[in-house]
Image (cartoon, rainbow, N blue to C red; front, side, top):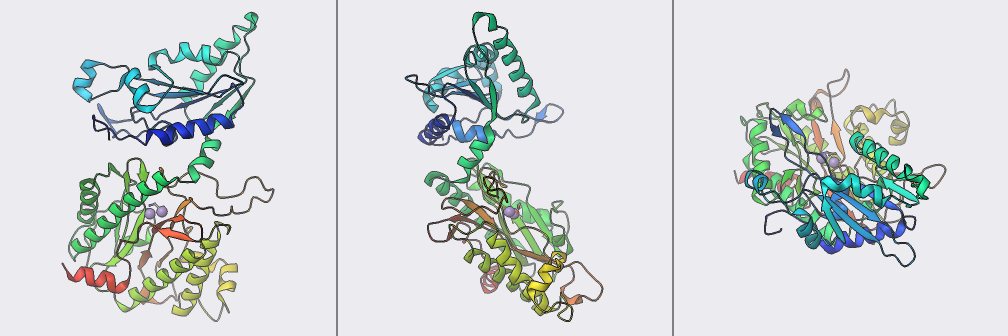
Length: 453
Ligand code: GLY
Ligand code: MN
Ligand code: MN
């Protein structure tokens, strides 16, 4: 935190990332990256401002109306990073709060130069003169695309004086996706704290739950715990899905009254200093799992254990999904959700995609500054584009589930049960480290905790 209360990523990490990116660019070329715009919600109220993740990754700077320009080194000329940001403005600061202004931002965030955002167009015409290539997020923002076109036109107009415009443009975000995929020690520590806060929120929500409470009351407990621990935002709209709502994957109305005998599925994570956690737990509203609920719940736990075991550096990302699906399909046959007389084995059921009736989503995703974080899931350098091998430092969720909508012939005792269990992990040298393990998960653990109510 700064004196103004604004969070900042460690400056040294951002400087190192800018240097690493500049070293990968064509010598003398220029990269341009804007932060996110402010967005009007209604009337004259904005949505709470959230910086662009790529921009924050390279700058640590969280004010709106800011652009980073990076000039790659060339021969003896070192790399330069340049910030364009809002100017100091006493009147606006009285109304809206502190702004760094270019000079203080340059010093605080380690830029080589900084200018008022209003000078961007004029400066870019100079910065792009004779640069061999331009790197930017083509198609990310129509406004920036138009500005870039105008800059290139302005540089080309100087052609008679021997000035050349960039001969090629490159998609900047692909390079940053690969960098963001591997979390450094600082990022891992922050993600661990975001997961610990979300885990405490789940435990608090369990202690609060009882028949008769509304889903939104449980949501309020989660949000309270996030905020009181310093998390700035929920990482996404929390899902608090009781009873049959748990079978709606993206349910988030959160307005039903929880009833005796229901399970409640809660998918909620927080964002702490720009990094997300993403945790799901499912628990009984009355504090005790019924026999059918317990049977499916423990199946999902076994599927998650199998998925954890498949997270090993060098093994394919897809391995954890395959492992979870195998356990779930076997369990679906065991409990009678799938018909043994039709499918002799889990493999047969999977080959026929029969498991998709009850488990229709993937087993996880990259996690980082964005809850569904960036980075390809496949090795794009290989013609067949196979699932990419895991590497130490990657962060992902592991979230198997089972969702039983009523179906003719299916065992009615399982109808309307929806269960998901989701944890956040970092790939280590020999497996994975679970960040969200403090969120109660075992049947006994949850039932014991809920006895405290
Ligand atoms: N909460 C979003 C997800 O689990 O992917
Ligand atoms: Mn998730
Ligand atoms: Mn989730």
